Length: 203
Image (tube, rainbow, N blue to C red):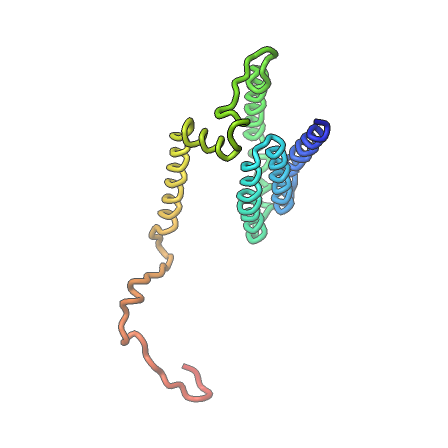
């Protein structure tokens, strides 16, 4: 238990510090690297909780795909950060208002005892019991039975987002030349002309 407690506090402290540096760092590349460190420490916390599948998905999906994609996008785009910081003072009151609302919501949630149950309060056992089934089986049974409709709704939202991205990409815009593959394939031999260019002269 002592080793698990030390590991928990180590992962938790590093995760909180790295998450803070993600927001506070001025260099976006460093922010993405600290985000990757946060994902690794969150995966360690999932391992301590016995959720090995979630830890593996966090490392493979978020670290291996999403965070690396963020890193490549940030490094490839030429972003003018001086211009972005010019509007900081203008949006500061809105940011403070949103921050105060979030702090008030956290105080209400923590004060109501929704996270830490009261002493003597009955804590419902997980469904199904983790001592009888594996981690993957328990997650599958809960996801595809109790939360089946929510899971399908999330998939439908992703489908709509994908269709919207395709429609926005393929919409017709003035001044933008698009490749028409059917017209290119249907072109005849008369569209090609063989020109004999004398040596030492141009076309």
